[in-house]
Each structure stands twice: as C-alpha cells, then as structure tokens.
Length: 178
Length: 392
Image (cartoon, rainbow over all chains, first blue to last red; front, side, top):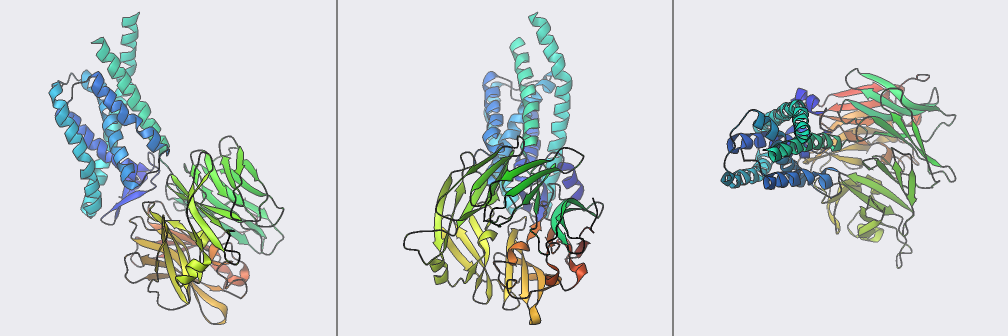
C-alpha cells in the first residue's frame, strides 16, 4: 500500500493512523471517516437519492459545520471521535457536492418518505466502520484502503463536476435576477 | 425551481470550500516530515567544530545541514529540530540552561529561499525537549515559563506559573499535557515532586490532574523516574515513561488520577537504561532506546521493542557507546538526549548519536543517524553519517 500512502500524503497529514490487522491505513483516523465514509455516502446517494429540501440541506450543513470545532482542534477528542466526525462530514460533503451534478444528469429524486431509510442507513455506517477497524484483519485493511481510494476518486469527480457546473448555474441565476 | 437552483449553488459551493478546509486542517508530526520521507537530527562535528541540524532525505539518501553554527566549545549546546505540522517549515530550538543566556527559536523554510523567522525567548535556567506542541500557527515551549510563539506573525507571549521551577509540554493530538517539576509544597521540604495536568491552549492556564512526590514513587520501589520522557498513552488516557526499579528497567504508567502501574519488561539482563518512548502505530508495542552498561564503561545502545501486553522484548543493536562516569552514568544527564522517533507511516524508527561528545563514541564513524526498518523481519539498520564541516 506504499503508493497509496504516497498518494494520500497530498490530502492528509497522515498523523494518528489506524492499524487494521497489522496494516497501517494510508490516511489518518479522521480521513478514514472522510474517505471510506465518502465512498459509503456515495452509495447511499445512489441508492436512496433523497429529494433535495431546505430541511435536508440544513441537516447536511450541520454535518459540515461540526467539523469546525473538531477539525480545528477546539474540542479534545480521541481516535473514535475523529473517525466519527470524519464520517459525518463525509455524509454532508457528498450530499452537498452531489446535488448539482445529479440535477444536471436529470436523476429522478426519490420521494421524501425515503429520507428516513437514508438517515438510518447513514447512521448504520458509523459503527460498521469502527467495528471493521477494531476487528478486521489485513484483508479488511486493504478493502478499507481501496474504499478510501474510491472515496477520494468520488470527491475529485464531484468537485470537478461542481467546478464546471456551478459557474454556469451562478450565471443563469444572476441572469434570471436581472 | 429557482429556489432549488439556489440550493444547488449553495450546497455545491459549501461542499467545495468544506473539503478544501478539511484538507488544510489535517495535521502533521515532529522530527519526521509529515510524509515520512525526511528526518531531522542534531549533530556535532568535533573536527570542524560544526554543530547544527541535519536533514536526511529517504528518497535521495542525502544528508544536508539545514542549520549550523561554528563553535569553539568542545561540548556545545545542541540545537533541536522538528518539522512544522504542514512539513513546510523547520523549527530549530536553541535552548541552554546557562544563566542569563536567552533562548531562541528559529523558523526556517524546509524548501526554497523563503525568509526565516527568529523568536527571542526570555532567559531561563530550565531546559526543554522536543517535540514541541503545535496547534495551528501556535508553537508552545515550556521552560521556567510557558511561551506561545505565533509562527505566522512572530509574536511571542509568555506566562509565568507558580509551584514548580520548570515545565515540560507534551503534545497529544489536540491536547497538551504538562509536567511541572521541582515542586515546592508544604510538608514536602525534603522531598521533590512533579505535577501533571493539561495546558489550556487559549489562555495558557493549567488544569492540574495530580501531584506525585519522590516519597510516593519510592514507596512503589521506583528509584529513578524519567520525568521529561513522559509520553501520552494511545487514546489520551494517561502517560507512560521509563524508570528504574533497583537494577531493573521499568515502565511506569499514569492515568488521569496518578500512578497506575509499574511494569518491568523482561529484558535479557540487569542494568538496562531505557530512554524516551514511542508507540507503534497499532498501540501494541513501545519502542525505546536501551543502554546496557558493560565493562570499562563500554555500553551497547539498542532499540527495544516492548510488547505492552507482555511477551519477549526484541533488541536491535545499534552501536557501542563509552560512558565514563560522571556524568555519563547518570540517567539525568545522558539518557534524555538519546531518543527514538517513529516515522508517521509507522515503518521506520530513527535514533541518532550525531551530537554525542567524542569520548562517548567507540569509533568516530559511529557518529550518525540510524534508521531501523520495521517492515524488515531482520530489522535492517541503515547508518547515515553526519554532515562534514564546511557544508552549506
């Protein structure tokens, strides 16, 4: 996994790493939540496609904002909390980054009553990752590293899609206003 | 529809900014660069009277001095170096316990020809050891006062404390532990003690957790406790340090309420002296230096791998030292300076004899940085000589 360590060194300080089955993951404990959790969050968006609403967006904003006290070390925290806050941030981040690209792709949103299964599935991912870290062996470590890599790739694709489509959207909105 | 578009715009923009800020917030590690490719170590060349900090680059195998000064002293003060959290700067601490001599911290660019920054600290008769805690732009140094150095603006803020003569600050993720030593307390006139607690990074106030006096540690059979070597336990539940129980090397574990337990690892003989500790990435093994004194002052320096849950201790021989008493046989004066450091990726241990006085080395060429490959079952040791004098 050396090349993965090298790759993630560009986006992660690689301090406070999880070791799963004797294998050190290529990202820190918080980024484990962000990138592995990001991959999971992308799957959730693909399966549940929760319809965008102010309420849902507000909740996902809060998931992003919780990273301010945790990510900037204003709150004392241990390894588990670092990973959980990374996972929560990932759910908020994937939701926010997905809305515009999915709308451009004219993806059909699911009805609002699918929000609860989406939320429950998202919450179920929190202990699942920690259990995998705690009890997993070397194969689990490799699977998590690959999931993290897929999460990073998903963020890059979503970020690129937003960088392309957001200026267009902003221009359309400003034109509509004027 | 228009409202929905505004939602998309807001969400997409927040996501992009959020991810960018997240990546920026991810933290680094001292001595080793955050990417585990470079390591800083102090050195002294008695021939050229050149003392400084050298950088070893794993990728190129080249050792270069990043800071050096020529000194006429045969036993000069050795600077300490560590990388800033982002790995872009090198922090060099020039600290002496000589009375009236101010201490200094230099901030040097790790790459390129950017400007350096110099921080002057008030004089102190106390000494400090790396790694120094860093939180964002703030670097914290503990001497006979607590100093907060703003690496961005150059501002230095100090705060006095009462109760002890000096203070060590210990980084532990977002937490900073402190150990205030040489305590003075009523009823302890003939006793020496230390206080452990947490430093508030914002107002530099101290929150005491417990005090421990020599009489307490003696009652547990501890004959020497390596106070500056206190190292956080994984998960932040307490601290651990090396110690001696009679002729046996020991590890002393502290929880947040005080002394928890004393463990004597099964080393292959008596008389071992353990140095500062480093945890393996999985939190199951403690790495440390182990010095075993032999005949005529000869001593073997090894790296010990101590399984925390019991089991045999693995020793990897590094080099032979010469300890001529005093003060070399006094752990207070010698063992503090030989430290072990684990790379952030958990693959490599580093230790150095680069700064030792020539009388402490069996051979001149033993003055070097030593790297131990933990992925190699035979624990391959690589030796990197110190920079030769006159280099820039």
